[in-house]
Length: 411
Image (cartoon, rainbow, N blue to C red; front, top):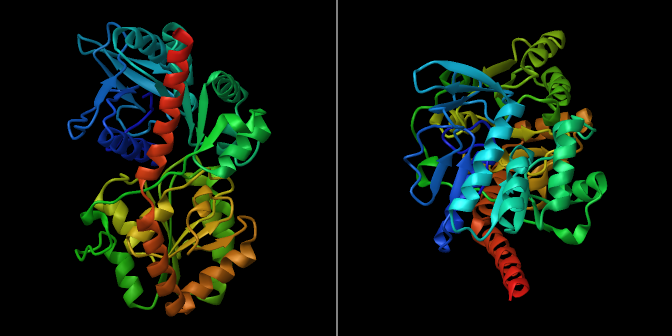
């Protein structure tokens, strides 16, 4: 299993998805070796072997600039040498070293399949397939087309994606929308792609029955003074549609001045969004928290403090934050471009660009507590019925099908 992040050292939802998917795979008896591009403490993981891909003559690999935290978007890695000195390594160099490590590793172990997550691992996956002949499954959580907001993005990344998709034995897409993107934008045959929806499973302490003090006490205080709180959480990038949300929120505040927007996360649009909020006259109604660890209480409290959670993405292959909001007892509004809308039906939905309708739906939830309560109750019940068991059974079915096919060829 080749992936670019795992909790608690992760930045986005892909790490959580990989963790939970592998946990369910392990319950079926699968033996998993998960290869990561950095070193960190994963002693909390006992259901699979976590193997950091450390280049020769390097003791430790740190992502981002000086810390494990910026994994998926990081363009920089730090190599710590045995003598304690360090040097920087760009993304391209580290991907090459990662591929070299994996292509050697796959010859040392007794593996049945190679399963790679998103473009960052594709070079390594293709190298492993080439030297071992094992079937390759690529799992698409997001394409460059999605990350660019529904447009052509980095041509280098798109080329890697295209080659990986072409040479894979099977493709897992996290939603029908993602499958459609792969067929339309990358010209891959539809019968090569299996839709495997993500799920989110929560421990008891992660659910909204949490009665402890909320980390956002100042926000709770404003609620007591009559404010309604809108929450959005995730990477602050063009893909997430937050400029449209801010423009819609301007209309909300015009109608209901005691409204607050809590924006949780970091990303390359951080300063742009702060400036836009100021330009729209929303400085007193918008709070930017910056980066929060996606597995901590403060992250969960951000959802719990909201009267409504909104995910206004321009292009979102799946999106797990609506599940996290519902787990904390908060109703959800999402754009129709969010892949998880295929499995969540007791939520409000709107076109990402329709700021008038977005504002109307926000105000309806704020002004009608019974609507919010019904959405919360039914949405949470629907969310709790989603599990990894069904999705993993699909994955295993295709594993075994390709293993049998390979055995037949060898015979």
